[in-house]
Length: 372
RNA sequence: GGUAGGGUGCCCGAGCGGCCAAAGGGGGCGGACUGUAAAUCCGCUGGCGGAAUGCCUACGGUGGUUCGAAACCACCCCUUACCA
Image 1: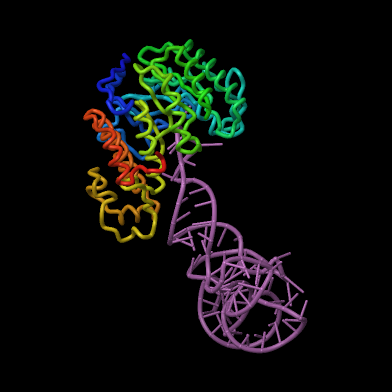
Image 2 (image 1 turned 135 degrees about the vertical axis):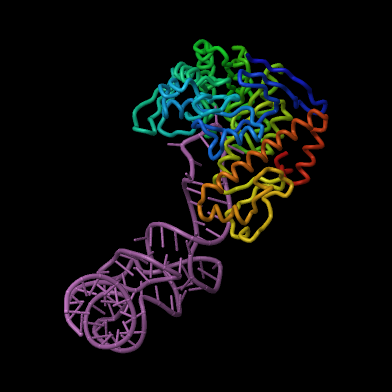
């Protein structure tokens, strides 16, 4: 129950329009996947996600393993039923936690982490990651990888991609769940050579899709672009390609024109909770005092239900009072904004107008010149 | 009327002889956020000055003690609790 078809290839760039068929529905690509780490896209009803035409969200193996734990998920017959989301779910392997959590010990067989709950040791291995993701019952599982910190030297990265390769092999062996596909993750830091090597290693294992990991972790935009361009040559065209953790319009455009089909990011939801709105003219911080009396929607071009109904001044007030509703409204708006943006990207590929769409974004200031 | 406390920056509140332009909150102002240990985190918040171990103004008021006071003393004003 997994199929990827290319519906249209851009004549201008490597961008493509595709259709991904998964056990819980079909998705048109390029697609943005909102992040719902703890079995919830924070501040959103699943009904609202459906209103926004979200076809797939992320969940996280590591977090859900800690809480509520696999026994609970099992007793609710998997993650879909637990969180009442009947569309697709991609679960992250827990590999990113290796990068983001301090006090870890990377070993050949896996990673030792101290539990944030009680300090006890957790040994995350490819086997455990697969066991968790199979229990969660996600439509797409991710191989357990090592997302290397940008400060690490090339020698470390070289060793690291061998680990990621070995772990990927193990993940392939352990994953045998019906109705769950498995994607491999390419690493290699900021070295074009190591990226090539990692891509060849991972592709040799024949996954159902391929992800680019370890980007947008603090490096400059030109570096991200350079690596993306370099690595995509070694990723099969007939498979879905996913860049992990990317979600600004800049990077989305850049990813799509390099032939990427999927991306996820916490940014729209997190920024929504933190008071920043995404608009066609850049982001705005609604906590700023200058918005107190503004009786206009966040973005006059936006036709989401938040912008149709509520003013900037009202949302500003909700944030100043730290009211939950403000976070809900901005999360909704930001997701709408980004999903709508990606929909326009798809339309532009369909009409073979990707480059003029890109130029339009540049002219508006939604994406910036220096990035390109 | 009696007894026991209090009065500190926009607000609450610590400080009880020098290291005090004064802790910590709140509020205000600004910012960050990219496979979410994130409804989180980081600056700034008396005035002047580019800056200083610099100057000015400030801990209810007025005097005083002291080399030095938000802190100690005297009186005054205001206030809280309890008792009558």
